Each structure stands twice: as C-alpha cells, then as structure tokens.
Image 1 (cartoon, one colour):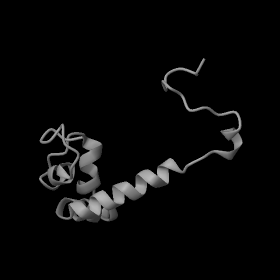
Image 2: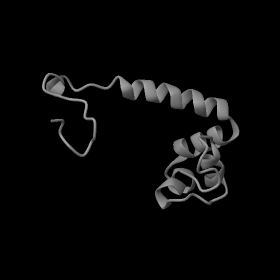
Image 3: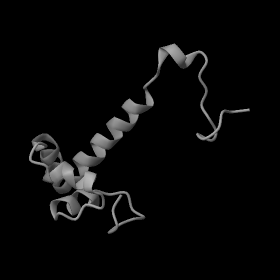
Length: 87
C-alpha cells in the first residue's frame, strides 16, 4: 500500500520506507525500529532488488495457499463472501 503507485503492484512501498515516508506507522517501523534489524535488511533488499521482492512474494503466496487446518477441514468451507457463511 503506497500513495506513489496506488494502481501498480511494485516495490515502491519499500522505497517510501527508506525515505521515512511509510503510509502507516506500523509499516515505517519495519525499517525505522531499532529492534528490527532483520526487517530493516529486508526493506533495503526489496527496495533495491525488485526481482527478489517478486520471487519472495510468489513463494509466500504459494505457501499461504497451502495452509490447512486439519481439525476444521472436514467441516470447513470456502466462502463466496468472507462476511457470511455460505447458504
């Protein structure tokens, strides 16, 4: 989520964090926090290497898509509208 390229999926989010111009305070903390050296390094990496950003994003989306909860899988459902139980 960034105001520079709101209709484009790119790594501008990370460029804004480097400039101290993150949209949300929690976003900016990824780079600015004294406790977040690991996240700061990732912000720098993804700002300067869009290929690395897109590769990691793709990997993470696949990983999230494979998440299942065995206890609720039998009775679970994929909702057509997340706000309501399917009819």
